[in-house]
Amino acid sequence: MARPRTISLDAMGGDGGPGVVVPGAALALGQHPDVEFLFFGDRARVEGELAAHAALARTSRIVHTDITVAMQDKPSQAVRRRGSSMWLALEAVHKGEADCMVSAGNTGALMAMAKLCLRTMPGIERPAIAGLWPTISKPCIVLDLGANIGATARQLGDYALMGAAMARALFNVERPSVGLLNIGVEEIKGIEEVRQAHAWLKQSELPIDYRGFIEGDQIGQRIADVVVVEGFAGNMALKTAEGTAKQMAAYVREALTSSWAARIGALFAARGLSALKDRMDPRRLNGGPLLGLNGIAIKSHGGTDAFGYASAINVGYQMVESNVLERLAADLDAFHGTLHEAEAARKTS
Image 1 (tube, one colour):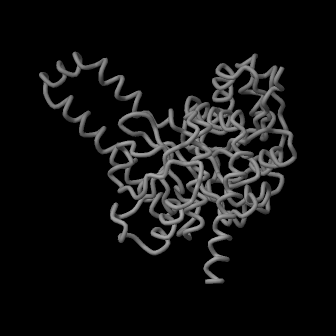
Image 2 (image 1 turned 135 degrees about the vertical axis):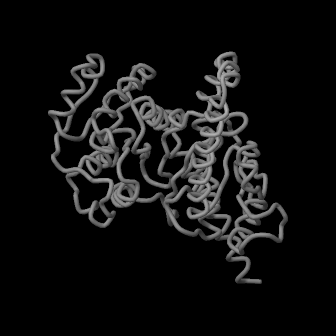
């Protein structure tokens, strides 16, 4: 019989704190009855929320701390709070007391703490934040979404393998397809680092199906399981897509309430509109792994509700179940070995 999975939670992170984290964990427990939870935060507040969730209370443990990381705190300030709920949740993963952690807290602080506490995997220069992106069919994975500004060709190659490892975990596909975001699909387009990464990914014998360059409008067309981009452009694309989705939703609401005829039509289309709303619900895609670390840390959106927080927990659970770290380490080692061989050959030629 497999041992229960343990997930550590930063109970004080995000806009809702325990009022979102505890109900979210209760929903996740309904999906994964084999999970045990470690809550790090204010004991009185967490116990108050657990009182309404008897099944969760039986499979949970609380570690009290008065120290929290505020959403406005700078990462340099946050990393000095080693007794905070965020740090302790990460430390539980580092010590082997938890299989993964989830936090809805300050993104910059979480990344800085995770790099210090969990450390990066061998050969990894910078971790990345990955996220699920809605498309015309099933979601795809996009990274980096803002952990870093700029990226070298080697880092873009690392991101491709990180995203592929996540795709295996979440999509159950052995050889994920990968595309590299660029300003055009032609070989001559893009900055040198992007073109160099393209050349390496195209020539290397990696466990991915490399599709080459793709453009921004093709992300939503589901050209690939994984889309690789450096952090500045990735974050801009994410925020633009979120803004466009809100804009389109506003247009639809305005159109459907513009007249009595439109309102009657909306009643007939209610079932289809409800399905569309569910499909575009960002809570279903909540949960961004910090990839490239010696442990699994999941960033939840700070303003999500219990349903969204449960989605983030589910991402962590799936990544643990797929042994994503072991497979990723082997893939990265093979990729870096190929680069070393290419560099040695260049120097001797």
